[in-house]
Length: 328
Image 1 (cartoon, rainbow, N blue to C red):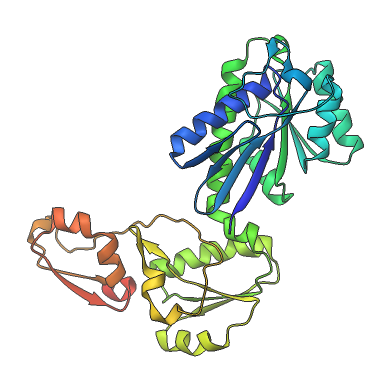
Image 2 (image 1 turned 60 degrees about the horizontal axis):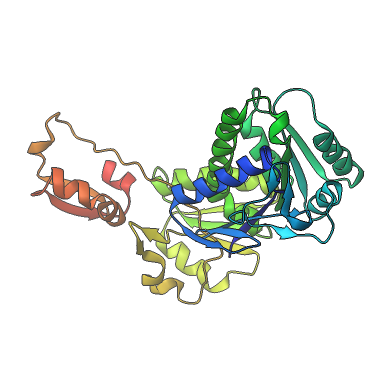
């Protein structure tokens, strides 16, 4: 299941073209699957699809002549900028205006006025006073899936191209990170109860607490159930309902731990949340070379195996029920 976010631009010089260029660069940096044809470009990960598309006037008209064919556009049958703007707004949930200064040219002001007339969500951002976290929250909180990005053409940007490029670069990475961490909550908001096997003090316990806090912000009525023993989990599995969900690790170091666990054979992954794991090595001595035994949870050994092989090649690994038990 994907979270789709569609960006619409009009292909004009200035803001539109800079955003298109930064979208290309963003896709290269992430090194994920990229689909490109004459009408749209799509960037895909396991859970996210970013699509770049937009209407342009007949003849691919823009301020400096014709829109380059490398930019994906849907060409309209009318040679009119206002008609192009209307269509891009009409097929959007929200409109993001990027300003070079506090004034707007005719085209930008027309876009703002039309967005208000059509009762679209509207966000106006100045590149010199931009709070990108607020823009990301605005997109997420308003559940915007089709975003029209607009602003001044090049002749009215007054030499702030570099600043605009920096803003767009940071914006795309910020929205990507936000969606990656919260994609499940944005996609699947009908869940009413979460179960997870999280012994108190374990990494899973604190991760679950963090995720559940975000979940409560999206779904006020969600109930959280922390299971402390595997026996409790086994009792819950046969009676899970359609509006209940189980939070479990799915991949560790690229290994699919979900499919390998026979307990989950009848279940499907609804969404995945990517999170980093940070471990601490606890010892009573400063020199780790003297360590002979290492206690931890089995999956922790797997996640840290490269470091252990390099730093503690001769250590004896002893598996226990959880990292918190190992610490005790």
